[in-house]
Length: 457
Image (cartoon, rainbow, N blue to C red; front, side):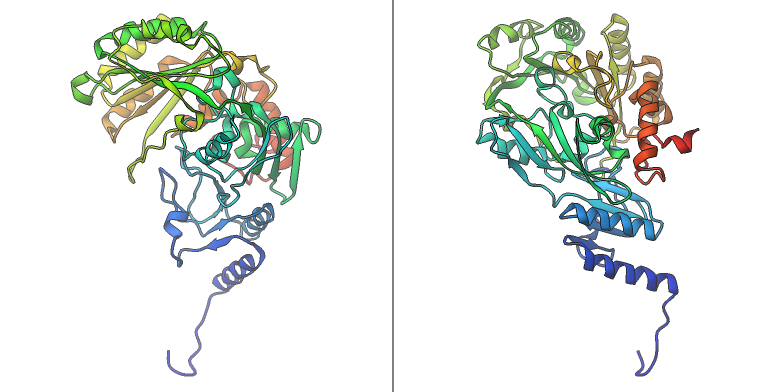
């Protein structure tokens, strides 16, 4: 620049620059823009590279409030990131504000005899499980170590002890949340009970949860592992497995995995994953019906610390899955037949069936925003790779299956129909009224969030 020359900056850029400087002066965490190192990592989720205007790594609830105020002042959309594993890519956006809660990752055992643990929503479940392991405690969580607490809790939390200890949200006794107006609220069954109800199953549309108080259980070890059966016994194993899990002891949680038929000329074994939790002496008797489903090729079931059951598989950088799921109140031969017919027709189709019931079903349907307590099975499905010609068949399969409900965490391309399946009418009306009370401007909007009543009618 020539000495004495002046540069011209547009008013909008100047306002934005001043706003970022003020934001940096306000928050105790980091404020990251696209001219800084680490921006791409900060703005990426496991399935999507976003281009937000700013990422605010929040170290305290006050930072969340400041980020919300900045977004409101500049009329920018908001995304919230915990572990960044949401398969719909909700943890980032283009041109908006990303509120990254990962710095709020403390796991604190209160020291009381009730086993309550305060968990920051930026923690990963692997970190939580490891932290609690030394005390012999565990929380019924998901199945992946790298998943963030906030993301999993937003919709429920189906994990390896769901039949013994319920959903992850079922053990929550209190929460701290920052709502759209910037207020930091501590809620529980006695203080703002309606918001506490909504946070357990629909948190992503109501605010930014910064911590949960969770009643952990004494569970130093579980019996966990995999039973592999020959691929040609798939239908036999599926029928026997669904018959048994519909009535199995609550200590047993299990899933059955049917690999894509395109793999190894259809000859990849069928996997039955098992986890036996609780103080039971007859684990072998509980597992015996599973071991008799067919010809056992491999049996890795062993007693292990609960923290070791959480996997952490690395995903390809360009991973862009198509995932859909359904909750079913009962298994039927027609459902099994539809899946068996679809697998060779859709060779990239991977199917996982998770058993529910037990403690999961003991919670009343209206106790939390997650509603589908009658479900005995969840069918989760994914198209592996990028098989564009198979997408129509994949979506057509789900149109035909007509599930009784849907789990919000396993939906990559959500539709309005999916919102209806996630939240039955009674729950949807209640959520719309709650949303109108705490977020009338729909700041926390997404394809799976129920809009405020003022925008729907």
